[in-house]
Image: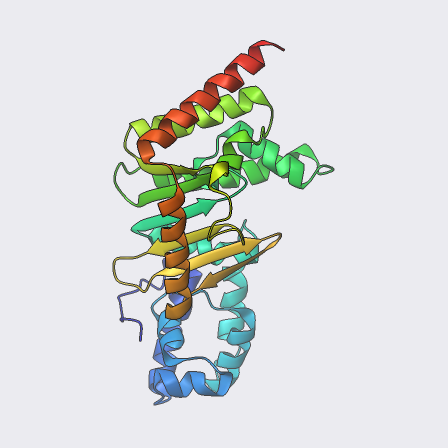
Length: 280
């Protein structure tokens, strides 16, 4: 069961929803398990909604309105919560990201969003949406760069990335964009803001061939894992699933180069891109 914590209902729609859910459940004389049982939701899940750990979905809001005679309160405020500049499948993971004390991520194809430069992000979004007008692309770039504010604190959260060597070799945006992007990672590493390892192509088959993986740890919440694919994503909180994801990450780390060797490789590839750019 999620630990109760103080919420400021005025701070966000999610805090308001959690505080009201707890108030109406207790007024109805229901335990967390009793409220969740008809909807196949565990008591711990209800606790996470009440404490603001989990994001309430619209189908759940409809159920709570009916079960607690809330006269549409949860539906109205859940709609406000859903007005995010990020896709629905990603929004909850980003909210968790802002609360995490430790983030560990394996990236198989692209530089992770937290580490992307403006030009790199623009090239990625343009590739995703080749016919979009420039204003749409710029909105996506601004939203992505907003996430990098997480790096402003010199110590929190602890960030640990494993980049597949393909991330370094895939020339997103061209050689100059890649050189700048890799030197940005180089700077963050040498400033000791992030830990980064490279998983070399020579390692062959590895535990995370299925795709990208992000693990998040918190001061007073259970750990979460986020896995995503093309246009979809899943935030996992089942303890067994999270443990399996943690093992997968550990196995990838075991096959990766050391941080020092990884930095040397990143610097070398950045120099290669610089030379290539000068030839144009």
